[in-house]
Length: 161
Image 1 (cartoon, helix red, strand yellow):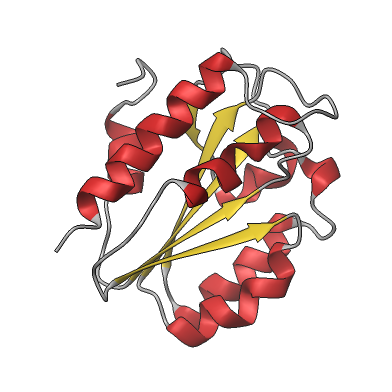
Image 2 (spheres, rainbow, N blue to C red):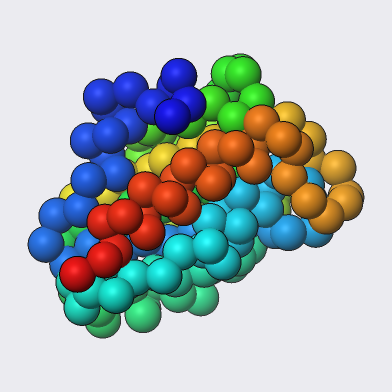
């Protein structure tokens, strides 16, 4: 496990009842593709777990998230919080506009997910993975890919019946 996988991260990743994991990002912007990478490597086989890839337009899946009525929503996105590449942190909802990779999302994440949280009463956990590169190229840096693989392995483990 990544050394940044601390108790706070572990608690944020723990499912709670109906849990929805939403991944964000663009595969065309190097490490911003961490969310889609995680999504493509996870398969849930439990009815109380669901996975959505919102890409760069999370506002487009907000109603789907609300309709599923989750008790917990976990967002996974690339972030910029001055950490080491691949470092994983929990980002408070009020700080996600400063920490997540804003330029790839067309609408403020805090607004979109505040609506989801308000309409469902769900617990919301934002998991940021420190990006190394946001260049216009495909593929993750080795540090971010390692963290993305660890996240996917964790979700696959909890996703088995």
